[in-house]
Amino acid sequence: MAKKIFITGTGTDVGKTYVTGLIVKKLKENGINAAYYKAAMSGNERDKDGVLIPGDALHVKTVSGIEQPLAQMCPYIYETAVSPHLASRIEGDPVVMEEVVKGFEEICRQYDYVTMEGSGGILCPICFDERELWLEDVIRRLGLSSLIVADAGLGTINSVVLTVEYMRAKNLPVKGVIFNHFHPGDRMEEDNQRMCEHRAKLPVIACVEDGSGRLDMDIEQLTALYDA
Image (cartoon, rainbow, N blue to C red; front, side, top):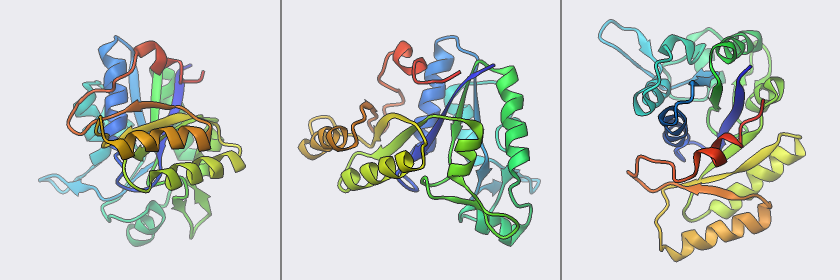
């Protein structure tokens, strides 16, 4: 059975997909049979034949070079750029937990390391009208530990600590934080790292610079974050 981890963020547009792509790329470059998964994806575009393309999955696949089929990466794909619960209200095909679990277990049988990405921040509604399903319910059902992706800049102390404390209150294990949009030598961002580590009692395990195209951490350190 695969080793697994979940990637969440302090909010929308902090760079979860970009960082997830670098994580999967690092695994692939070290000869690891790696896969990507996401329960629901909104804001996708159509190809010339009118077929919806899972944009986040395509980005991770392109950046990492994994051969996993796109069709295997996400069971629920929506065009409207809103949270999954509202997108499914507009377009139909609401998320069903059993289908998410089925797809996840399938790739866990085929790959050695599975990196699952969330939608938005930790308080993202996945389905609401037909049934109430939140992102945290998916994480809990799959038994996953998480990494939190955060913007390195102003306001991140508040958003990181609130996310960590909420997840702890919900008994969702968190392994660490990854800073995105990091500028080495920036006094505020370096202080943000120290303050987040102090208040959240979690390590900032990597800092990703814009355009770097790499995750600056040892492969042994990365793989140790995944749970069986």
